[in-house]
Image (cartoon, rainbow, N blue to C red; front, side, top):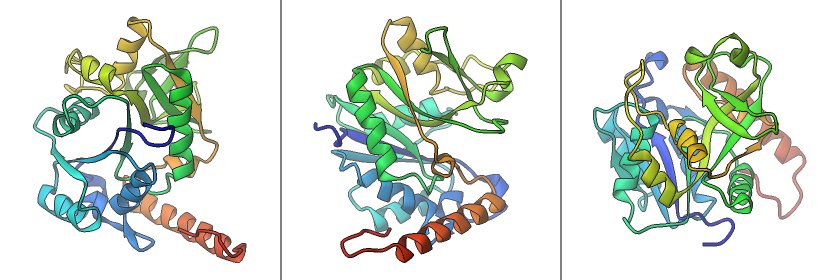
Length: 265
């Protein structure tokens, strides 16, 4: 594996997306000529991973069929009735070679403006740190609803707390967890085997892996992005429209600044 070639990229696309108020699975809604999931797959493939796995559940056949059309080489992983991003990633690991090592990147099927450059920076930072987990973070004016990144006196990440579980001081933190990570694959497999659903939501939290890394004395590092649009997910039609406007603005600006040899996505 080279710096920009992770062993695997896992795209989580199992969510129901009820706030879209549509019979169409959320990740299949269109934006700028591609589905949301299509944008995610293009970003994932930009890293040229050895394996690309897409986790599906709601609207399973439609989503899996779409993946087969736009990226036939991608692997499909079915999430079972156990809830949570931790379980989704665990299901993805089940369709990857059991002996696979190296770096795994985890991203989402509803974050359409995430770029190759940011993903490459995440992988590069992870390899430089040589740790267990690297998380992509951002500072936002209003962090309501996001998981907060907790840091110690020396700036080290001590954990991530979900908004609903945070106390008043933790909710004042403006650095948020994008949910996009680079993991050491061997550690990820081992850690997910220890994650349980013993919480108020009855879910396997992927963030629990960070706490396990800390407990094992392994490095948990971060890389930040100042481009908040890159980590903005689509939860409803209002957000879909806002991201569509921003994508259109970026494309128009890129063409207006175009020079021969430039790539415009």
